[in-house]
Image (cartoon, rainbow, N blue to C red; front, side):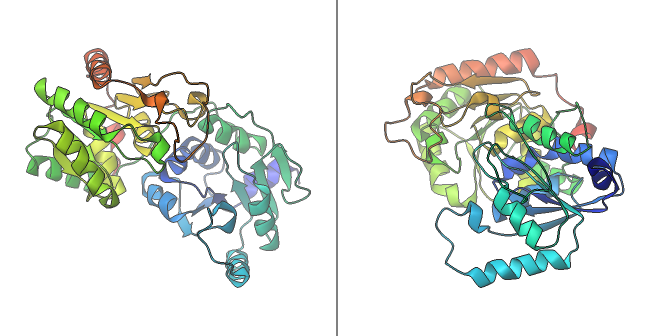
Length: 366
């Protein structure tokens, strides 16, 4: 049996993506390609606790394994070899036919490939430029560093027999989550069909966060123009949202207590979104919500930029980009964008594309 035939006949595949929720959202086109070529296959996502939350928005995923992997750890996990051996045993019990190991340009698939080898998974594919022996059964599939992450994922699945030229991001928002989001908005004075602008100041890396006082300035200018403003974040970011509101000098709505499906519904309902290069930017791309992305110099724009939603990328050229840092020691000159420029971009996008949105039934799946 040829390599492609084995993949096409597989019925139980492991999908490995151990990063954040935004990275999992960008798996959608690749998973869609796999299911299109092999409708009978069962896809189980191996994800981090943060990434696993996005699985509810991807209808191609049948099951989820949540795991903090030592090869993606930033030094927080204790030295526990027995834990790793138990994980290999658990994978072996699931009898996977193959493993698709998705990584960014800076990550290796070979460690995960070796774990899957020890778990008895015969087919193992990943992307890499370095030599990894037989840790992978196929490849490794090479990919350029500046390739968009969605295209990188599609190149991997195409290399083992699942080709696709459809790179569109797509999510399925549960109808119950959309209804809860609508009820939350109504409870805060924003009715069905009302326009509003969503601001999301947070990001997992501080180097990717536009300053809170500037977000406050954006909110203040939008409110002066008559726009209802909703500021969103996680429960852990409540203090961040408070600082944005304090700098807004006006009435803004806080939202830090909804789940990811409900948050995706808020993004889908918004007239426009302002955020950094983080998860909401990808949700906007999937729902075709106009998005102004305050894109820091931490990453290449070509690797993660929105491509299907109306968008404006705002940043300043700096010699240190891309730095790939979690924090910035020089004050984020890459994000030295005044609030009035952000608001002008919001108004331009809404003026050009405010009605050019996906019909509600295409954005929300029951």
